[in-house]
Amino acid sequence: MQLKLDYEAYQRNSETSKKAWEHKKDKKTLKDKVYDLLLDNPMANHQIADTMEIPLSSICARIRELQVEGKIIDSGKRTMSKYKRECVIWQRKR
Image (cartoon, rainbow, N blue to C red; front, side, top):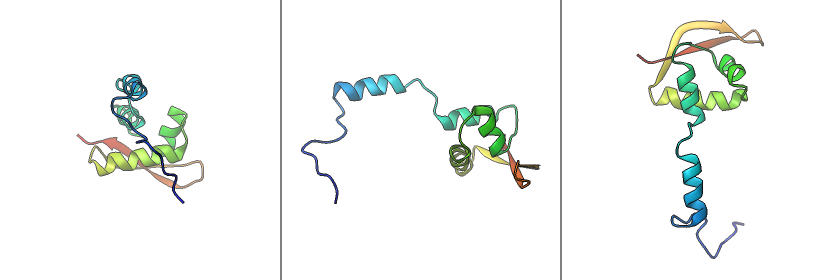
């Protein structure tokens, strides 16, 4: 059963919505940070996760988004993960 509210959850002109926007507007997203990290160093998902100290699952999702957007590509190189599996090394599309 879904909770029904007497008001809209998001209110464009509320003070809290405006403050949240001001707080967020100049910050980079995780996807942007991953993309920036790949500028000079092609890396595998687990290497990115280790470098950024972020869970691998978060990195995998951001990599997929960047791949779908056509911003990164498979470099054609592989590396071994700590689980002895071959991993794609991603690079920014030129």
